[in-house]
Image (cartoon, rainbow, N blue to C red):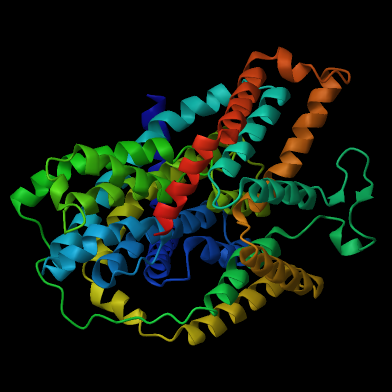
Length: 502
């Protein structure tokens, strides 16, 4: 009965006129950034964080969530029509989706992507609705040592699943932890690591860090590439599937949804890892495996279902534990902090309307996306004819105006410039900024839980080993690190990332 009442509360919040509007804006914007290569959901959410200052917490999260899972839809459009994935998680869709388009089956390929994503989004949202609340009640039984150890495991998992060198990923996490503790000590009230600058007494501005590392730095990197886009001029026809096609995509969509729902919960997982895993599995189990790479409809259905499911179940650890599973979820937590909401398991008690409204809005958003994507395919492709130099100027101007209007200080512009240059430098050095962001968000939380643990144990560090849940997390973290040190595992990790980039 409680579940029905909670869903009723969620529907009342999600169907409010303003929230329907922001859900529409989110999925529309997400589709657009998914279509446009080089402008992903991470950079877009970072740039739009200042806009959420004037919004309610439910509207802000509904809009930002719509951008994230909407980008998974948009990325498939150009992946199929132009062999150009607008979003990283759609890269694997090009393998068979583009071949289907070349074979005159662009319409069925696009319909497959839309229907598979709708199915996956619906099921994944149901998974969130069914399991988020029970997991929240379990998490409320955690004590400070368990929370600290869980965050340690989360950061180590993000290192394993980060691109590039493990040492560089660890360095990024440590840098993020250092940046996160800049400001005023919550227990003593003294400032630390602020280099004498009073503007840093409240810590580093998360909006400036996010926009600089992911927005401006990404733009600077994209300006180095001379990308040629051959815009499709042919009209796409046959935007529906035959009964035979529906039968062929059903089980791949089910398997893709299951894989994406499971991997999306893992730290560092999400949409991209899910799509590649689903494609590999489908290629091994499908009866039509000989067609893969030549236009197999299963090769579109499985990864598209997986990336949408993965993007949505990534909300589970964020909503239940306050633990971001990837960089986008870290920014979502940042949006909650901006709204004055402390992430953690008590959100469902203190903010039940926001919690259930966000879940229900995902159902609404997925139906909006199907209604938007298929009729507006021609419009999305036309956006690709906009010169990237024009987009750059617009995005950078919007970023600067947004962050200045949010803070009202010139120092925030200096922070933006610093993190933009830092982000660009890190990209050139092969360092992924996502672990840095996770460390920055989790750093203050880890410090608080560490100090609480030491206070309750009177300074005895063995408290992390004597609590069963804490010990289990630490053992899991140690096992992950030990496995990563094995040469065979390290080689397979490198091969997996090379395959995903190819």
